[in-house]
Length: 51
Image (cartoon, rainbow, N blue to C red; front, top):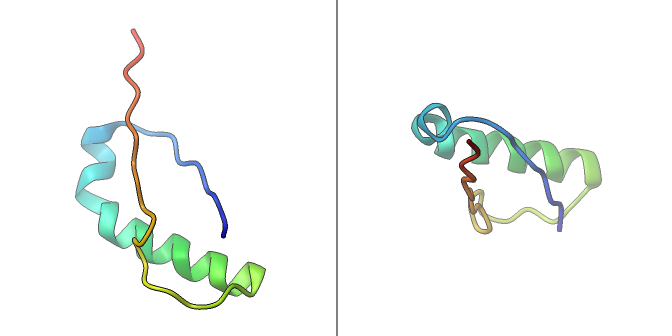
């Protein structure tokens, strides 16, 4: 299992969440020789609001 942190604004990331998940999954499978799974299986974007 690979863990990747992405920092950004929710309003910018929400529209591309599915594509971003697919790209990150493909990169992790390729780079770390992980078994292929379904992109987005563990995708959980937690948004933190800082003032």
